[in-house]
Length: 470
Image 1: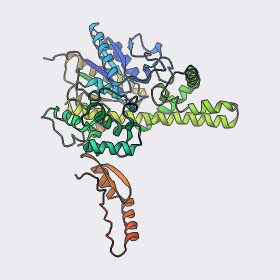
Image 2: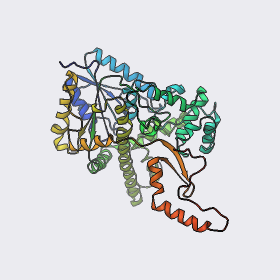
Image 3: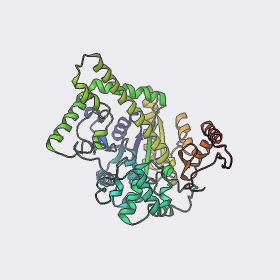
Image 4: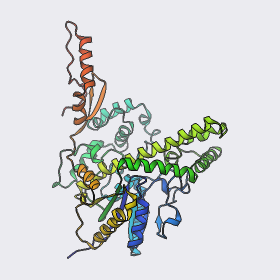
């Protein structure tokens, strides 16, 4: 007999421009649900075009939470803040007898909400948003504001195991690893090892130390052992070529709808904050939203040129093209997060089969290939019926989800080729580099230069003496 899940949660994820909000509203309407926004930019008040909020008249009366919540001058929420507030809202929705549906493109927010275990950032005493630097710590620990090479040297002294995991130029991860030592007196590598030990012994893998594939990078959400709630994940995905055209058209539509006016208003708001002496960090929050940061230079410098002049038109065209390129790059990052970070976490929790890819490449078939399939999945999930194989829904689902099940790579350790002065982070990268034409040419050239009496030859596999062995 089928047993309905206790406290079910439906999550809609995917790249920008795939129709996540549309599907969430359709499901909420069909299954008496309420929507929790999981997009960091849409949490900001106003700016509906820049943040791509779904218009009020298209929400079909469905309650939306965490939308238009944060003032423009405020910093984005930390992961812990989002998890605490969204968990409270989920509970409230359930007390009303409704289905909570989380939708949004800030996937590290969703990732943290889904999994139970504490993150390494909790161990450090704070949690950061994706890309957030070590803020407010430089006064207490001046080393964190030093050049990356000096921070890495300090990390090598106190936690050499963790130092070997990061690329020498990856400043943010090196900073966060050293910050954990400075704040807690504990090695980040030891904290991470404890998390690996807490994983169920029945699901060991060879790549537990590969924090890049596991999503266990310091300062970010790790792959925890169990979900907080019984969860059905619906991943909207489209073929790359189709999505590229769709995103370009979407930016053009945003421009026609008033993108430039919104960007100008945000520029004016920034100038007002400056006049008032209000501090702001332009490296995060609404200031780095796609659609504003690409237009900012044109807005501030192009205003000195008459709009009808050819150079003004060219500058605006270039700014709009930058918005399109930024949107496409963001979509790739979103899908990469799902394919690697989230998929690996679900695999470790034995929940990978609950990730269903819905092919939205052909919008003319939305009703049959997206909406109808999603409704069947949600209906079966809520009553506890057996769900289909998640790779069986479409050719794209079979291709993408089978790729996600390929065996993980080997350990992540920084190795430097002295011949090419290049640092590689995985076995695959290292051996690929050694076999590359460029490396072989560099070795041959160096051999010729150094082929003198009483000098040792240079061998192709030479690596720096500080490199860890396999």
